[in-house]
Amino acid sequence: MGITTSEGSGINYEPETCAWCGGRRGTTEGPCRVCGGKGAVLVRQPARVCPDCRCTGRRLEAPTEACTGCGGAGWDGVRGARLPARGPSIRELFEKFRGGR
Ligand SMILES: [Zn+2]
Ligand SMILES: [Zn+2]
Image: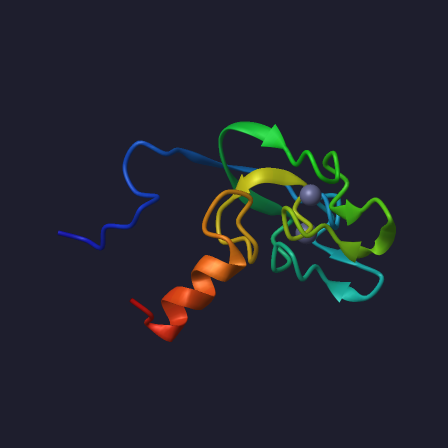
């Protein structure tokens, strides 16, 4: 059998337009760093826009920076996002990293 992950069966991902580059696969700076130049990101279905940036991919208070909720993709539940919208807190990850028990 293949590799089983926590996001395996039962969760459906569909490509949605990357908010950071608007689906143009890149910006004036070069290839889009959020979607890797593909113009789309895989989003958990049913797709919901990121509540932090309202699908702009930018931080409202700092429009030149990527939204910390979705990593710049503009959607909630983006597969492979650096900062999962739902999941362990930084503190929990830190405790796990230390191997504390
Ligand atoms: Zn993009
Ligand atoms: Zn966002």
